[in-house]
Length: 156
Image (tube, rainbow, N blue to C red; front, top):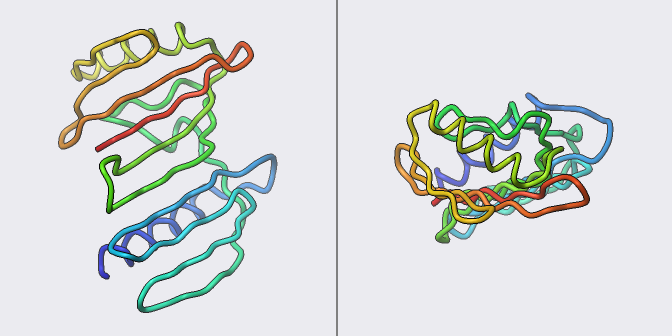
């Protein structure tokens, strides 16, 4: 129960650190030990833990490239994070979905270069990169989305 409480507190802290009422917000979901919480793109928060169940509204948040990094490497500049899912029960512990304002080849090359500069080795396979941070393996899968890129980071 303590882990889920800490994770839910993280959602609240994140929401206050990155509030913004403009555009679509970032969706956040956290599950662990049969408990969970979620914040929709509009700021609606639902929490279901053994200690507390409830729903309330917080300011909408918009997470960007600067709000996320792996071993010091942020997302491609001007990327927008659509969703963050933290799962304490499954294989992929963290899943982050994002869009980047460049095609997959450019974004993939940028990531490979940034990880090399940070001293993190990655394997490039098509539009995917695979590597290991301090504790976990990660993958970044990119696909074209109308002149931009849609990306998914999986850690765990």
